Length: 223
Length: 234
Image (cartoon, rainbow over the protein chains, first blue to last red):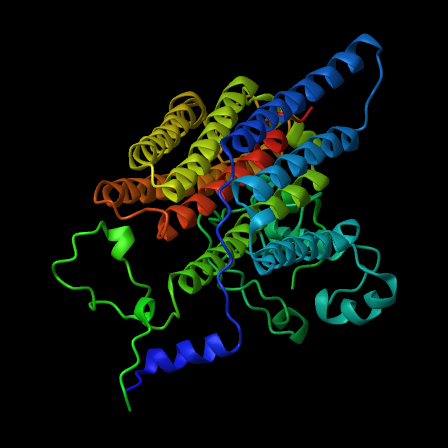
């Protein structure tokens, strides 16, 4: 009787499934690759030190991009060596190489698209501001204010702004995470206030303190 | 229908009890594979797919690094200034040597050299241990004591840049996840050693050595990138 496994076997045999012999990488190759990897490691340290030396001796400012490009180029070369010979992609089923290449492409997309908006953080596009302003701020006289600045202003107004947390650095300038997400913000009745997702969220370290000097200037009327 | 005996296509448990050949010679592929070759390819591709997820896990750290460094370059230069290049360099050399011993272990499994297979597995385990000890004693512990910690745990009083806690977040996150991979790898090498002593690996069957080796190489590659990005900024 033909078993389940056997019928699979016949199927594969009929389609010409053949063994491809395993490549045994020679010791000489492995040692050569190790030597190259150690060399490139010293090179990357030497390049960084050399660059510092040049900058000091010749009193020049070398842009950071040079440093990064040199370091990453050497790291890429080392990676190619490891992947090709130690991980044997050179001798392997090409499908595994494709898996690896697509992984790198995915990482590139990840990095690329995350970087895209970097120049636009903490700002609102002018064409969109008129749509955002009514719901986002709900206050007159804040047309020129970035929404993050307004969040800070609003938190100060609500006496929930904690200056001790401002230096932790959540973004350029003071972003909404410094001041906006504070607990026990009284829910005001207007619909504009309802659009702010900041009420009743309790984060550790954001204890409400009685504000003292911030409101001394008396900015804006209280609701 | 007559029984078709395809020999090598047998399932588990069909080996006669009196077969005293070593495990790697009498090993049969799992019943859903045609033969050991078929199984080897499938296992290896499975490992590569797993490595793809590993790369994506670490890429989260690298993207965080890239974004935060672009936003606050001076904080990263300050932060990198606190790191000692020599310990990073030493650990890089340790990991590269361990990558070589893993590749050698695969080779000795392929050629059936049991003694050197075991020696190389032990050497790789020791390299992983050395890496962790260097990291713990000379890097993690002093930084922890000085309060060079991420985010709200930061208490180092002499910071020159308000965004240094951000650098430490990336530093601890990236190197911490990497170190946890080294710990997992050491466990895998201990497992390989136990199996190698039972003669589980040989020219016809060394899937586990190959798979763990690939994992270890990826851990090495991650460090190849972390080292210059964290230690060599100025």
